[in-house]
Image (cartoon, rainbow, N blue to C red; front, side, top):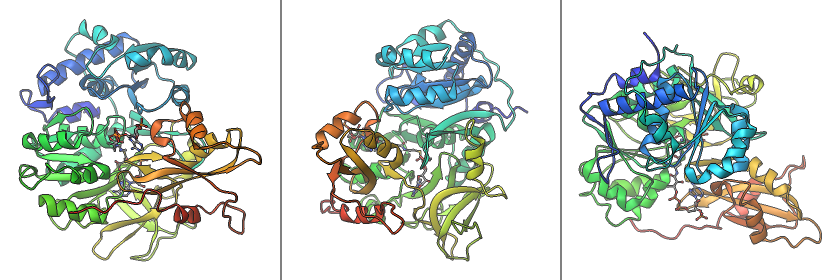
Length: 511
Ligand code: MCA
Ligand code: AMP
């Protein structure tokens, strides 16, 4: 049998059952049969513009129903889907398109003029447009196509998607995810989170990352369930949607913002059966307050772009705040010495390493980078530090990688520092994450000016505007005369984090 992810995911859905439900009308809502017909049209369109199996299809599109169906269509057609954060600037896109060499690039209509030269430079053969409401040239190109399509045969190891993820050094790397990688995670999550065709998920995450694209969409499909498809997170809209759905997946910022929404009450959440959090640490305090307010213990899980989901708190059993639960049934997790790779003793803190059908195939065209991240026996080195307690719960205690997670989005300090250091007037910089009540961590730049320079926060902000996506730009810039350094001369970020920890001190909040 073909291992095409779409073929396997779509097998569960009753043709008459709802798949995507939009809150504001029926035209963009699709049953499973409707989804099949629309993705067939889109897959035929991909073939018509020259997309062959194995070709990359890159998309930087606002969240919309057709944008999601384009992902499924690409998988049906045996192409490799490459979603791109809508916040990326043309300068950032230039790298992704040049590296991935997609056959087709799809962007919003308003961005077409700015991005067409970027796509041309990367040798992209076809450029189409797609807006959140379905407007753009994709719709016209798909309209004439047949609503029938024979899913392209794929093996489990063939690629279904490439997602770019930054490293502590160098440029972003494309994580190659196979049909089997994505299928194994979807099938497992459906089982352990008890998804059935009766479920309706509130989908408010962006669809350019693993969480909203794969964890949410694939798990729903594997169960033949439905999703209430919201354009973005909005606390009041989520609470209203709770009357019409029963599962929510979100990043911790969703939960802290929901707690600030007075309409969130036990009564409002009565029809819900599951709240899932991931992508960044959920504070024990938010977990506790959410339980007090709604009666629900948020189920926290842990994952990575390269691995999909790795661990999850139990559906039945204690969902323990501050832990990320147990390894998924088909995933092996171990703790090892960061430097030597020696397996650590029970309960010790060390590097979290992972092996299983969920672990990616390597970084696109970077075999040496891939080799660096794996142990000889096939375990992937996550860069997260953790321990496993005597009940088997995994605790994440820190990161060996220099990474800031802001509102569930990853920011690699090295990338921001490179941009800062290139500015006239900046002698050196250090980018750190400091506690932030809303975003978990906020990006802060610490800068030492060149002698005589008067460069200030506003000038730095203006200079970075077109270079870096908005979420990577520092929320504050602080100037120092001297960077704290260790004996080796390396900047001590820990000391900077301590010094600036109170910059966004959380206001007192009531339960
Ligand atoms: C928006 N801004 C941000 C962020 N989002 N700045 C820092 N961090 C962010 N995450 C900027 C906006 O451009 C805006 O700038 C200003 O901050 C305020 O925007 P606001 O309206 O408050 O933001 P929002 O549109 O409400 O978005 C916040 C959000 C969103 C809802 C938390 O960022 C979000 O949906 N995050 C989820 C990301 C996600 O899906 N992560 C999963 C990755 P200005 O006003 O100056 O223009 S997958 C993953 O990590 C692994 C695999 C896993 O385990 O899941
Ligand atoms: P990404 O590169 O977007 O896949 O981000 C993956 C990283 O997010 C992981 O390596 C962790 O550092 C972090 N992460 C994801 N889920 C959690 C969680 N529940 N708790 C703490 N960190 C998390």
